[in-house]
Every structure is written in structure tokens, then in C-alpha cells.
Amino acid sequence: MPGEAVSPSVARAAATRDEAARKAAKADRRRRRRRVLLIFLVALLAVAAVWIVPRLIALALAVVTALGGGSVVVPADDPTTPVAAASAAGADLAAAPAPRQELPRGGTTIAPEHRVVVLRATPGVSAEETADRVEATATAFGTSDRDALPAVELPVADGGRGGAAWQQLALTRAHRQLLVLAVPTGPTRVVEAVAPWERLLREPDVGLALDTAMPLPPEELGAVTGWLADVVRSADLPQKLLVVTGPISAVPAELAVVAIGEAGPPALRGTVLPLGGPGAREVLATPPAPDVVLYR
Image (cartoon, rainbow, N blue to C red; front, side, top):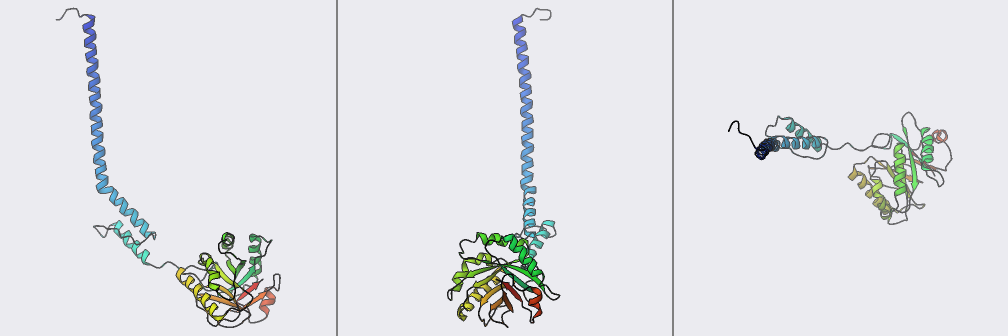
């Protein structure tokens, strides 16, 4: 009743009840806010799942296709949408043939555009120094009708130990030069001797020299030229230099063959000189000028 005194215990109980009520109301407000936020997130995810995510995926696939990632077809309800247009453009790009690889200094054929100057790597001379030497030597062989194409001839033996050859390739490639693998062969089973080097020979700037003193039998030459021509065709490579010993009767168009000790078609004109031998002025002064000069 008004005017009646309230005992301390009753006042404390009332205060406790009021505090509990305030806490309950505050907790209830927090629960309502969380419920509203949860409903909003669920709605947002539903919109994303129905509208945004499929379009992002379609756009990503179209971009990958346009960059040549494959002939991916992106379905679209409206063919005039940007996604459909990008998909169609990507399909056309994927269907187009890739550009053919080129030689280090341009072009896809060795002769008559280039005169190849080959310097054999020697023990005790670093790969960098060899690359510099062949560059200096080859430059003088350039003429008004032919560009000089420097090449480093690297003697190799074991196909399973190609690390040094790959390192040399990285260096010659940095100098825009050819690498010619000099693979030792016997008179027979030449393809078996060369086959371990196929991975390197699938590079556009790697040639091959059959390192043998004796002329190879015609059937062996035919087998190895056919095998190497298949490598060039399957990898869509530029014409590949091949150095052989002795006469050759047929040369596939994929190869530029130099027959040591022989002159005239179908092989290119080649000359073998000692290291440190005659320079460009002397070599070119005696016609016909060679297509390939090998310093060994």
C-alpha cells in the first residue's frame, strides 16, 4: 500500500526480478537479431545459388575456352549473351590449328634462308664460352641472301644422362642458336642408338648428327631419316638438321640433311673444317658456297 514501509528483503527481491526481466528482454532481442540475420544469409545464399554462381562458372569456362583451354561448350539460354559469344569465340579458337614452331632466328626451313655454322663443343671450354665463340664465328658467314644460324654440336653418349644436354639447350636457346646432338652409332641399329634422345629431338631447336666415321648402309639411313621425319611431323616442328656420313639417296622434306664426304642433291652442301680453321672469307670465296659449315 502507498505509504507503507517496504522491507529491505522485499526491495531486494523486486530489484532482482527487475534485473532478471531486463536480462531476459536483452537476450530476447539478441535472439531476434540473430534470427533475422540468419534469414537474410539464407536468402542471400539462395539467390547466389540460383543466379550468381552459375553465371560466374559459365563466365570462367568461357574465359578458359577463349584462352585455348579446350573446346568447352558453355550452354546459354540466350545466344546473344556475352557468355554465349565468348563460348563461341573460344570454340573457334580451339578448332584453329596452333602456329607452327620456328627455328631460333625465324622461319621453318633451313635452306635457302639460312647458312648453318656449327661449332663442336670441346672439353675444358665452358658452354657459355662455346656459345660466344660460335656466335662470333657464324656472324661472318651471313650474306645478303642468307642469314647465319649458329649451332653448337654437343657429343653425347648415354641417353639416360641427358641433364647436360638440357642445360646446353637452355643456354643455346638463350642465344637463339641451334643445338646439334652428336650421337655415336654403329653401322646398324641406328634408330635404337638415337631413340633415347627423342624428347630432346622434339624440341624445335635441336638437330642430330650421326657420329660415325663409316658410311651407313642405305637401309639404316632410310630407317633413321624416316623415324626423325615422323618426330618432326608429329610435333609440328620446323625443318630439322641431320648430319650423316656417306651418300644418301632420299631426303624427307621434314629434314635438312648434310652428307659428309658427299656433295649435291638431295643433301645440302656441307663442309667440315678443323677447329680454328679457315674463316668465312676463305670459305665463301670458293663457289659454290656451303649450306652448312661444321668446325670439328
